[in-house]
Image (tube, rainbow, N blue to C red; front, side, top):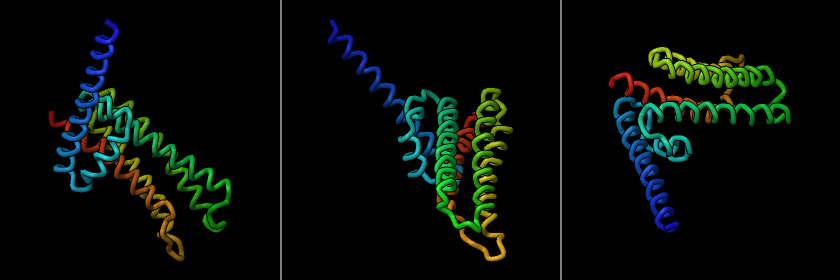
Length: 180
């Protein structure tokens, strides 16, 4: 009897993960067809590595999971930047720029948190505006380096690009929800 219970449990878990994988694949394909900035491989890899995304049962749950994923990754990058800053791994003459970027990352995480609250109200237009604001905040970090008297390439450009692409995913999925 226990064996049958284990077998049924395993079947149900496999079914949930198969459904989530199909949801991820279908949603990424549809989103990348509508949004040229979003790349299919990036979307699939990002979401298949996201535990919450793997358990989403519908597009609405997937949007929330992708927002949480983007917020979590933003906080992680911010924490690493802060750790590196405290360890004085950046040139001293860039201290102000690094502090501005830390502020931009902190702001982006807060904006994504507010966007999640907006999502629960089904205010998709405001949600998209907030997530775009979060991406703009990341761009501001890079712009600070470009606008110096001797322009530089931001040491955070790869992180900013990664997070921007990560935020584009829930924006694209939210656009799909708006059309329903």
